[in-house]
Length: 383
Figure 1: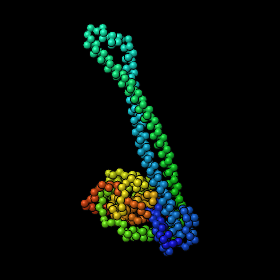
Figure 2: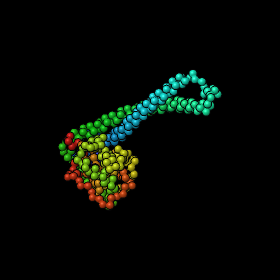
Figure 3: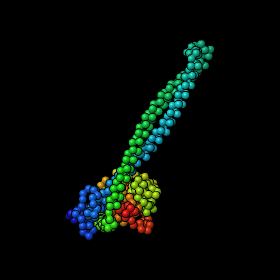
């Protein structure tokens, strides 16, 4: 394997791995790396190949998690729409009942008055024509009211029918989304079991070697990024960005949980979306939608609170802390922590509040003790 190719070994945090450069001392003598995500015999695999497979499994699980999150968000909106339509349908049916009641009263009144002399004849025979004219006017008003009541009944019926069709369609959509969500949930669990299976097949020495390999690769990637000049001098956050960042920092130490939106656990985009929600600036739920919908900024313009997006599919997100570090929920089995910005392959950055003015004075949030501790590999408890 060439040195250039070896530098493309993954070291992900939540969704998969950033590409690293292993050294001969980090490799276990084995026949050679495998391709794809097949597990094979761990005892006959290089550390690079094992890490590549492990990070690919994590990446697949993270992608499935973000797909699940997107469907969960759609389902939440669909349920709200179904409830809105159901409430509208109930009001329309009540209005229709009232309209039909009014129409019934008019019908009874017309029946009771059907034997009376017509207003025209009454006018001709009246001793007081003006009184008869006034009475005729009232009769005309009554006829107009009858016409309006009939139209109201017809309109209420049309509205109730339309709302009933919309409500049925919304309910069908809700059931479809619920079934899709269950399927995607099962997909996430299946992929995470693949991670657990690979980790369970490794020896203690292999696990220790993977730790060293991943950490050294992350350190090398971070050093290369920081010396590249990609980041500019320190930037101050906006008021909202400061609030979002401080919320994220307060979550450090809480466990990663796929689909988690707090307050006890989070996944990567659950953390960032909730942080900005608490700052008064709602943003999309998933990392992919955050990348697609929020204004993009160059890495050189990063300021605390901005979101850093990872992987070509935008399947992972972290919040920029400053000084080349991010706050993130890495991946299953880990806890929210502070990590190097280059721990994953960068895709770009977005700013939830592009119009927010930087604070004149800014003091970074105080980090808890051992905020950078913890394995980015996850599932340490199962090792």
